[in-house]
Amino acid sequence: MKYKNVRLIWVILFIIQFSFAQEAQLTGREIIVLVDDRWVGNDQKATTRMTLINKRGQERIRELFSYLKHYGKDSKSIMFFEKPADVKGTGFLSWEYDDPSKDDDRWLYLPALKKVRRISGSSKNDYFMGSDFTYDDMGGRSVDEDDHKFLREEEIDGVNCWVLESVPKDKGYMYSKVIRWIRQDALLAVKVEYYDKHGKLMKILTVSDIRKQNEIWTAFRMFMDNKQEKHQTLLEFVEITYNIGIKDNLFKVASLERGVMK
Image (cartoon, rainbow, N blue to C red):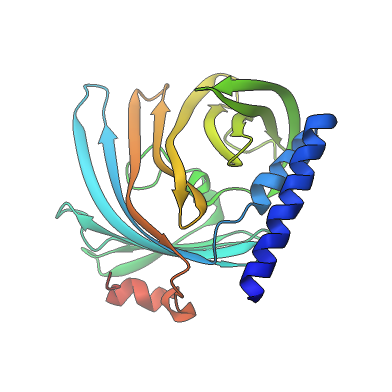
């Protein structure tokens, strides 16, 4: 009953905020806060297919499963690769903090070396497992790490979107700006453009197959097109389930070393 009441309050607040947006345009920051505050469940379990596509159109397919749990604005996640054989058993553990002054904690387990490697904050711009997603792309950013500006409203595939420009406050960050198209009904980005330090378009993320899973808006397909590297990555949720009651002790370095059962 408590869960239902909290969720009802969230829905009412969203309706009020959305109605206000129709009368007086929200600022870029206010929209990003809505996105950041949207209901995503307490935890989730997912099976994902990752397809890597090189400039010659050749594909490499990887399969992995993951667990994620939210702790207020913070979150912890762990994932393991199952296929193919050359990456099987590779694990990744991440503790993401909403506080922009605090670096996220990340560890990578390489089964061939039987060793856990801690990923430093300076490595957040590195690409994850040969994909076109950096560690920071996967973890997301705190609202106040960037300045957000509302640009316009625009339709994508017949759905109303807010278009926002986000400029990092840290001038050393790998992107000079990020432009997002946010679906107004689902509060999800359906398109994201990433620009390099020189202001040139670097990557385009296209998000599709958006539908409700366990009453939560979920993007089942994410396609990252790296324009500069001529490389692409497709992420597809094969299966995802929310609110299954994941134990806290799963998200430990020891879990990387011993492996996790699906």
